[in-house]
Length: 440
Image (cartoon, rainbow, N blue to C red; front, side, top):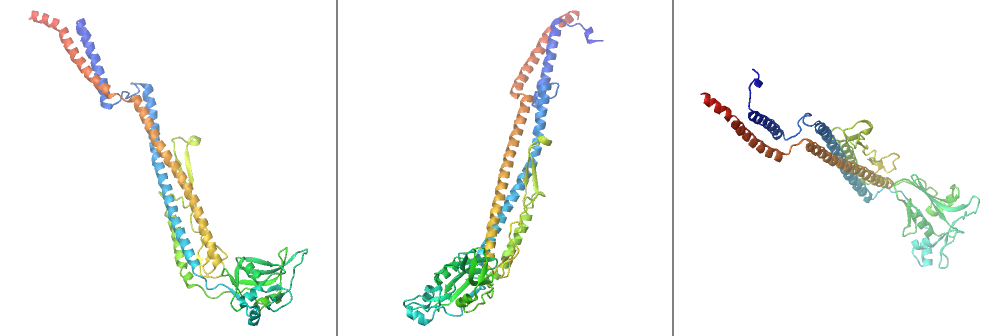
């Protein structure tokens, strides 16, 4: 039998419909209270539901990228720590080079005159020491003895010629690959010659107490000193007689030093061991298989898009090693090295080593600055990604979340309404119950 075959009074049916509506609202209210959302499906609100789903999906995608961004930060930080440690090792190498430079090389080439350029008798006539007597002597002109009234003359031949080509009196000094011409005027003295050699940077000159000329190389390379003349095209013509007048011999070619510095030799293994550690440290500066000090490239993706719309940062690493930084090994030799190594007994090579280490520090500082800039960029994007993810989640929540305070109040109101509805339905049924009592 259909329920509609039963005849209900208007009051009963009205109260029954009211109870049914209250029950429906209660079910909706309980659903919102249990889930915390006012939109649980597209049926509740299609616009809000799909908009919130899109926002949540993007937030999820961005959160997934945070792991990659975090790994990128760690990779850059590992490289940065590696650069710091490599820099410390380079400074340690600098200390070793300075220590080698403070230990005087015993193999500096030295050319010493075999004859005094002024006799004791000349010194007695001038009233000066033999050394000062020699310094005052003229170089060019007829040979003359120093006296009380004359400074004396070594008897060099003046080759000055206005040209062309112009010719100047000169003392040529060679050491290794370095050549320097001390140009002398026709009225130059021995003192002018000494000062000119001292300005060369290739050798130093002085006179001993007996008036002998001593020329010492500043480096360990063989030294040649030759007197003669040079024209304005750089062509040099030696004058053997003048070499003999200065040094007592014409053989002043490729004079070498003797012996080695044991203190410098002892630093070779120390320098080379630190150099090896530098290479090994750079190889260990990777993170998760990527080493920016090994020349690897790091790509960090910042958004969920693809193709041309994808936003990412490419960090190109650089191969850091002793070779790439121009740091050669120490070798126990007095001869200047022809490759990237440094001869520890050679002063010029030690200067090259010091310069190479300074340049290496500049290179490391520049790369460290680049890494620091990239790191700051990635960290900024990491913070931005977290913040935008929070914005997306909040936006989605605003579209779908229920106001629990309101729903709690609604729950109380519906509970009251349900109780009142039941009471009203009971009252509406009392008339039918009275008739039932009469039939009994």
